[in-house]
Image (tube, rainbow, N blue to C red; front, top):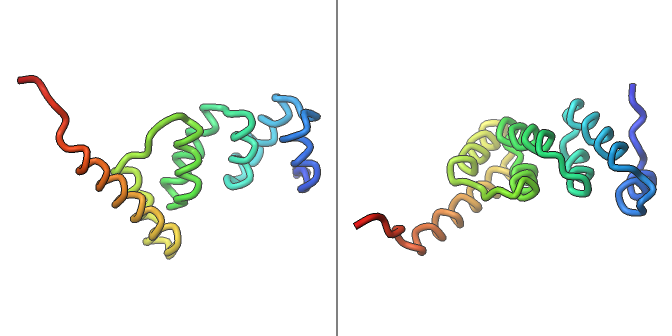
Length: 125
């Protein structure tokens, strides 16, 4: 079993420059492999890795984790979609994760409202 860094070690690895890129990515990879996504995203915020972030994004959709979805999309430099917010909301509700379901529904509604307010995009004549 891998011995993960404690809080103090994590702070040193992430924020003091004592940890190397390779060390941060190794810890992130090990955390993702063990489905410890909330911990892994902290490392990926400091050392972004597109492959691991895509895995976290997929995991957020599978588990209805609205917080993880929001952070993964942002770190990938993407914009959240109505479809994905809807998937997160539905999955969270089906798993009884009411806080995540409410959060995802609110984000869905906000995004939908913004799109409606911007009006139809001008197409070819």
